[in-house]
Image (cartoon, helix red, strand yellow):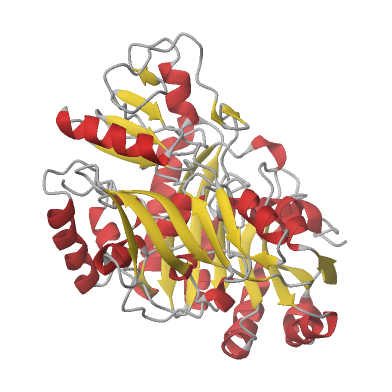
Length: 500
């Protein structure tokens, strides 16, 4: 009897946890946060007409929790939550914070798994209502405010037959995604990380000045924006992004194998990935079989799941990209397969990375990552540990073929060929200790093969060295030097776990 029935669609929905989309329970309106009536007016901040939620406000706690999409809310409490509706208001709030010695943490979409925008004391400056998009079709440049969500940008660009490597999950805010690197759709064909496609940015510095940063104007800030992550020493309000022609013939194939066939999957990918077309995106997962009985042993309940996305401009191109996998041992030994399925880019979001998972397990959440040249070794080393995960939503994902290279004008510097992420997702607060420990133990299987980490997916508060390992020593030192130059008083919070 086949223990893996044709449950591809259920399995695909669990891919949501690659980026662990948020917005579940968020208090959003079409134009930004729905700030509860009766909140105190922002009197005393020149140039700011919005509202402030203070800790004494009755709605503070519900709003504080809504700032982080998953249910494992960090026990950190800003004094004020301030939501702006214009770039000018960002400068006004920053000047006010500097005058009153209030530290600032920036939030664009609340997607960071550590809840990095929630800090103790000071101001949580919420930029999620900054959602303006302007497109120059001729130059293929998109001018995008920080709070724009992935689905908004993809939808707007499609009107001009363009696209951008946004996050795979539709509700991810572009601000944090871009600053941390950004592993997006068709990433290998777009220099491996979305951050390398930032052509310029507009920032507000700690002294309240609004400045532009690009390759020729304030190039040191431009360097920092391209990978500086959730510890950047300024507030980015707008990005200038390089857009690309929209692929018109996307084809998708997927295969499910038993976990004991992991060697088949990794050996095949080790052989094929170096020669693959960069327009072929390969995602390999260790995950729970969504149709396994609750009492099924690991050999029946844990599976390998592989999906390949071909972003061609013709059906023939895409089929040619998928052919090596379709003719490989992966396809031969798969117990479930579905090959050469057509999709539009807009269809990929709801079909493959929806905003909820089966069974309501998109609850409590933590993630770790490795940028590596040896993803197969990580997957094998992790496989036995993965079997011990009690929650059916915990998983490991490997993105084969990042196509990364060093950019002298970008501080993103974890350079290797592949990415592996390990995700602990569970439902009950009483299991927190088990899953945080489970994730920490997972890093002992990942780190020996890591050349760095992905700063958007790293638990740095308890292990501050992991934040530093997201950057080369030279890039880390330069970031600290620039912080002293542009934020000498430490107005902006640095990375979780770091001093300053």
